[in-house]
Length: 446
Ligand code: PLZ
Image (cartoon, rainbow, N blue to C red; front, top):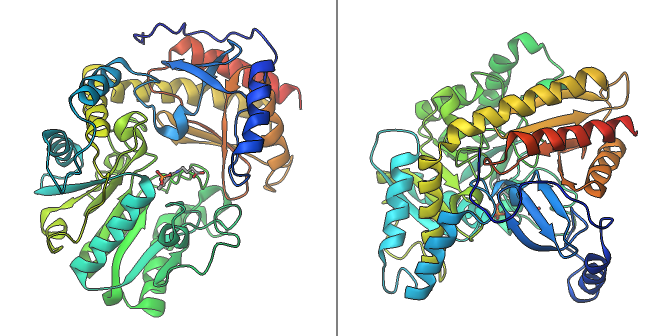
């Protein structure tokens, strides 16, 4: 894959990381910015291109995060930049519900066409993943006249009040931030590595347990929606066993429940399909998108069956900035890049290269308990030798080692013991393999 960028697609260290300029800015950050924000990589970014981030000191860092699965089409992708510049020169805001513009309608049309299913669909645009999740819940409740929302163990759906309630993990997301929204019910997730029952029958057993719990604890007729990430992101790239998503979707159809796929992290070619549910031909009633939708501009969406999306009274949905024209222009650049540069295919190739390299590491280093994921969304889960006990210490050491060598990796997981690989899909084979060799050194150094 070759990317059009003036930033050389090579790792390069000219100072230690963080270098002196980054150090000074990180010090300033600690004085000026809320202490409530984390920091995954200890360098301050000056420019980006393709799969390389350049810091203030001139170090070229391999980006294995893509801004948490956002810059799928590459950092500073040319078609995104061009469309953003053109739009910002024309106008940057009217508010779509005050005075409409074409870009918003174009993005909705693209979403309606590219999301799974041939039924008539409509969309609404908002600013962030969490806001899209909130809107999906509003719409599902309104359309069904039911209140209960079913989510899963290890789920992540956001940090607003309602979405904190939908998110599973307490630290750091929920601790001290309650009380949380009501009518949220959490179901067991078939997490194969840690499943205590018979793994041969995991799908059927998990589906039966979910149906049983819904019947006994909620009543299926009270459930507005079942919401799930087709591959759980923050939870640790947990891939549901084959048949689980189709089974849930069937259960929803039989019980008048809206099946919502949260594709915020899995969407836009990331997993080797435009959307991850396509892997098992699942057609959700509603699909939530964000992150990769606009190559770094704040945009998110809910797309659903027209009759569900139209069940809401006029002005029941909205917001000042939702579907901002500049973000919509960026999104059209993203759709164009995915289509014209074959990024769905490329994500599959990235998955093969990553999968192969990670499996080799797993055979060399027994603390890697599992390699999992799909396409350009892969992860390894680390354990204490000879057990399934989580090994967050090793995870931190490996990530920090790689950071010092100019490779940006992200953590994940309920047990904080997962390293995830979410590179821009346009990353070259050479950069991927370079990142993998640094990772090998990191494990060897433990
Ligand atoms: N749904 C599946 O992955 C965002 C969170 C980063 P927003 N995940 C990254 C952090 O530490 O806050 C996410 C997601 C899924 C919803 C969201 C929320 O999307 O755009 O961050 O609100």
